[in-house]
Length: 149
Image 1 (cartoon, rainbow, N blue to C red):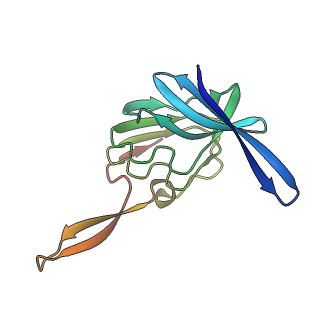
Image 2 (cartoon, rainbow, N blue to C red):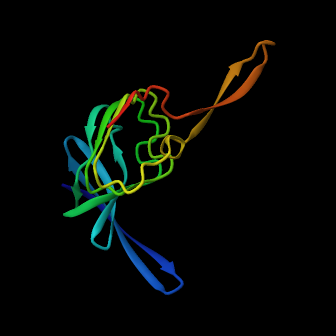
């Protein structure tokens, strides 16, 4: 079911590339994606996924090949995620703030296993230090991740 459509035109030095942003309902979530040639790139979804989530292998009739930057940002209810074989890249901070994510199943198509900090990003928090003063700390986005398959 398509909820909305918009046309985004992106100019480049050698001409213009046209990307279509669209939304498709799959398994109770609205997945927002862009079509880039013959592939789809997952931008984000709503409502925020929770529990066990399987990323769709196709959106708009095209294979999902990329999970974009921040796609699952701050989905604190997300516990497990399965990424299909046709996904070849995961953007920086795609899972930042997924503090309860304990298991990630990655398909065989991922060309480079991203470094932990690149897909979970880094976030800032405040705490009270040993002198009783407020201080700023930095941590990775998912301290709970226990298993990657």
